[in-house]
Length: 483
Image (cartoon, rainbow, N blue to C red; front, side, top):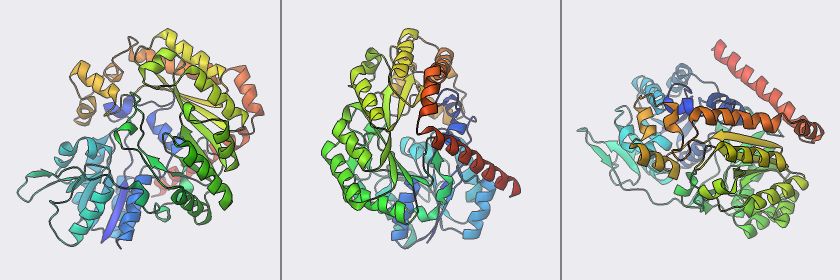
């Protein structure tokens, strides 16, 4: 069968949910996702490798970051003539994506399968869009391959776990949840299906760039995070290194960002992984995210020796009461120690902070600003809290308002900004937004910080990277104009 895997361009600022998303103070969601985190569609690349293993012909279209309009996508689809259109649907503006998919379905003779956060969270709402033939209600790695196989053989699909669909008489059928997929059995992502030159991030130090996932889920229970809803699994060190080797040797990748929430959660496994990378003499550089209580001097030394160049820490607040309210189970002293040690060992440090948590006041935000300035971070990101679905914060909003704001936004309701903010702070949304900008000013416009970065070994590479991104975006924009 001929299958197109699709990541649609997201129409930011056209829904209540997408308008409220403002990562990093001044950066709106659109600019943030085009500039700061130009990540490849890793989930689709895994799906593509599974479908290729079944023997299907695959085309992957990244409408979001390759600058493809719906018209251009339709033109490419008609040329490929797919039997299956397999598309991701996000939670920020699903309504617009459903409209785009209807245009594609009306002009193509194919089955349409939806995956992603929205179908998983709202399967019934997804299948009410009658141009959607099937939707995956879980991660979908098992369900998708079984579904494609059944469609290819023209067989019944009612015994496939983890899907929702309509019968010929219009009845909706939602099957039981799919079994947990063994993450270690996933084949390598099919990176040959994309242009690996268009992906990078604002802090990438080496071209070319890609992302990897060594584990999924998180065993911690922070109030703002959705990763805890997925059972933690990790790949074997051998499989991780094999993929790193493929990235380096086959795709000439120079830098990899690991997307795991807690990369160093298993201390021995982390050290063994580093030793294996060293043994293999890999030259590719890599970046990780982790918790401050999951590093120590031995681990950081091993990370550096194995090619790690940066650690991104979830810090969230510079006030201990706020950290406790977030159920972070870390202390300010642990944060200070980890960041200081990381910077001392020559790694680039980034800290993630959130403004507007439970119990947040002007005083606790000032504590966060002062703490961020005190510890030796190279970069900091200050976000107004957004209560993502399935988190404690989102459930608390439901409890206090009786409303599911994500669903209402999808249905076209214009949700006022103040409704989206966490319900456990007296600060208004406007005050929180103002504070997020103040934190950016306070952190980045300090003479001491500017002097530090002028002396930093990272600064030159980061400046060059900004010009690379500008050049890339100009190329994509010109290509859109010409086509």
